Amino acid sequence: MNPSHQRELSQPGPLLDAHGNLTQVGWARQPILDANLEHVRFYPAILRPLQRFRVKCWDYYGITTSTHFFSATLAHLGYAGQAFVYIIDFAQRTCREQTLTIPLARGIHLAPRSTEGESRFDNGRVELRFQAGSDSRHLFVEWPSFAGADLNADITLHMLEGHESTVIVIPIGHKRFYYNRKVNCMPAAGRIQWGEIRLDLDPQHCLGNLDWGRGVWEYRSFWVWASASGLLPDGRTLGLNLGFGFGDTSAATENTLLLNGRIHKLGQVDFAYDQRNFMHPWRMTSPDGRLSLEFTPFMERVARTNLLIIASEVHQMFGHYEGRVVTDEGETIPVQGLIGWVEEHHARW
Image (cartoon, rainbow, N blue to C red; front, side):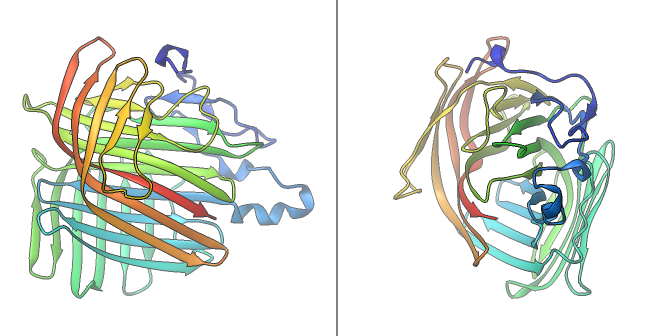
């Protein structure tokens, strides 16, 4: 798919009309559509009270440093919710992770918009709070006895003026859809304390990302997502967001490169990898020649959930990207040793 054949949205408005249909389909640089999920309509009237169990929402944050990756997520999946945090140590090749699964997502509140408001969970012991504002995001995590030691994180992600996002609105079958905003390369300041280990975040070298998802999915879902936020030798920030596997992407893919806060839209990206051994190198190429990358994993994070109705299996590989990407203007950007990840996700939800 040629980027010029994709539909870039520019007209603000509601995501859904009164009948639950998407008002627009395509991609945007900013979240210009209001996620009015109260208008979801895909069951007949007699079953409409059950619709809330099919709406899936999450706020996923990640912080990349030169030595660690830290992530915190709140998810509302209708009949269950999840709060989970993990810390990757690149040198030790370790992952420390804790997950709370909450029936009916009681106590999980997600802000209705990605641009403002607070998402939170507090059960009197574990607390996660994500506060979004016009020019920054504040993350607070307190988790006693997290993988054997108390965890405390207080992080601010800066949103520089004009910083663009990868936003897609795509249908999934009939009256199902995915509305997603991904933000890469937000300078991160603050601290992460886990037991005696303390990470002080320098916004000159530490970058955060957001995956904000809202939608109605098929019960069985699959996707591959590749992402990175890093710095080029000349000091410019470089973000990657690539993926495939769900929905009708004829109007837009989520494939983008973010250079110094500006989106450069990519079309089709083909993935080649070994599903029998995710630690083998992955190849990502575009038919138009604008992207050619090899991703070499150095560790694998596996996350499995099996609650009968809900089941999920994620293989998230951390590693280095090597290769090149080409901007909208034709500038070739060499990619060397860029730390990021690729994940394959199967879900029943």
